[in-house]
Image (cartoon, rainbow, N blue to C red):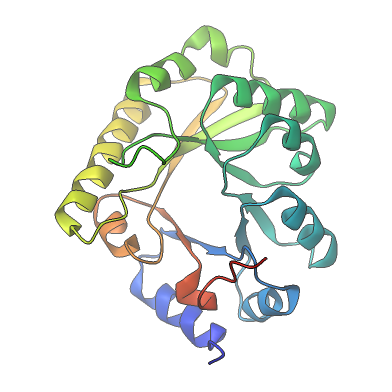
Length: 226
């Protein structure tokens, strides 16, 4: 059954506060499907494979904001640095430095979110709170003239236990508030807390998320063969 993308988008947008940004997770979906979402008014799309992101950027309207939402390898940064609007999952200082280097080459300041590990699952990427404090060291920030850290992101444990999911999101909100209130630097503009996907975005919003990443609830099930 073909999903009604326009209806799905309208339903989600009507159910979330106006201050919450919707990232339409379009990974594995063909351009004609993205164009339906675009024609319905969606402008922010998220991809998790560099080659697919580059191809879609070249083919689709230029006013789309492309977010890279997957685990990013340092040697792939150069391909998306010229155009990416936001890199969601920065999980090491080495990656941050590589993004800064490629931003300088392209005469751009690239917006990034730092990924914090909040889930019980070990397979999830992200920094510990101790590693996060190292990233936010003033001396390191002083070297990042072509990066702007605009917030934090995290993924909750894949579980049906809503209390656990809420607890994990709440823990990231507390970390976000701590740094938002205590840090001031030209390379910091902590305004985005990205938490929540198709299965848990309502819980994430209740716990402070102002950016959600939704795929299957808009486009239907993902094509894992791609």
